Length: 170
Image 1 (cartoon, rainbow, N blue to C red):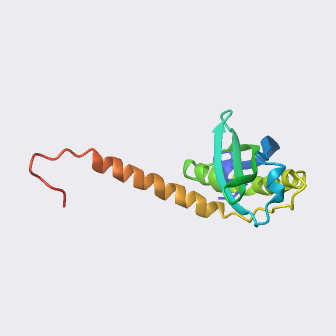
Image 2 (image 1 turned 180 degrees about the vertical axis):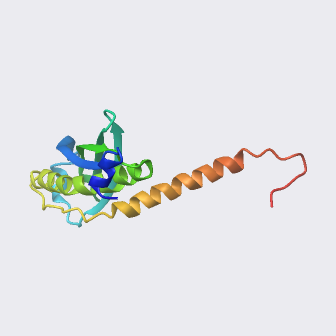
Image 3 (image 1 turned 180 degrees about the horizontal axis):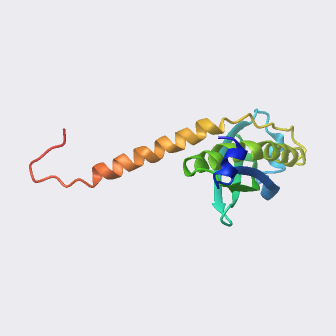
């Protein structure tokens, strides 16, 4: 249905827009400096990505992407960088079944390049070689989160069944 047809039927056209992008949080820690600089081994890098969000008003939402980068040499932390990139999005007249994918896939995909740049800049400021975060497939992360939620619901439903004494589950 075109925008003109929707307006003729009294329906407002769906709209989606980014209102603002901002760095919500950024921290850099180098707890073992300067001694760690004497280590000869190469570092091991662990990256964790999380997505969040909240409703701010009827059609206004905040979406966040948080990256935690922990770099270790042996068992000592070389550096720990954590950043949260946030954005304010307006979603109006969007069908309910499309809201969660927009907030869980599209918004984080739009925010992630800003987060990557901020993390790389923070690491550069430590005087260590820059680390560029890899691309993230937010659709795969979203689908994984949905699968985990469904698994939890099944497990909770299974645990709620009370069997009579002597009965077993098949």
